[in-house]
Length: 136
Image 1 (cartoon, helix red, strand yellow):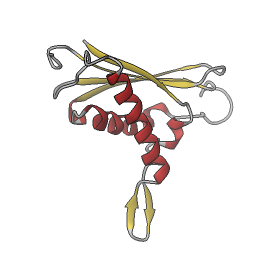
Image 2 (image 1 turned 90 degrees about the vertical axis):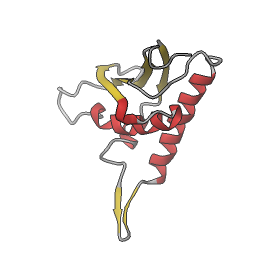
Image 3 (image 1 turned 60 degrees about the vertical axis):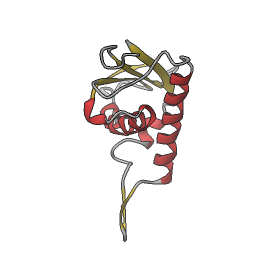
Image 4 (image 1 turned 120 degrees about the vertical axis):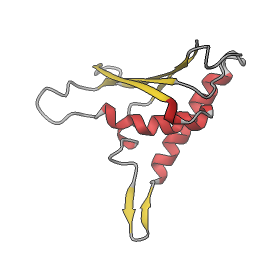
């Protein structure tokens, strides 16, 4: 099993939600600089996690799992709007992971889950691949 895990800032989830990743201008659609910056930060964190394994983790073409656990600030089923929508974050993370590991995201599978942790809201991302796909 080839596996890395990282924790990213909770604020990133709203910024690269699918609702915010593309904007319309008079010349067409574009991705805001803040979105590109956050995706670059995630790529850097993924590359750093891989580099920290001293070459033991290598991802190859094949099925890659991207598991996202969002620890929300509050329960979305209480009064008021939900603070974030975790599923809308998936595509932005997948795009960043794809560039970081060099594997096309058409082979990605995903799990997105959430829990409430008002004292420590965060996003945990696990990227893993069975050894048969990522054999050394």
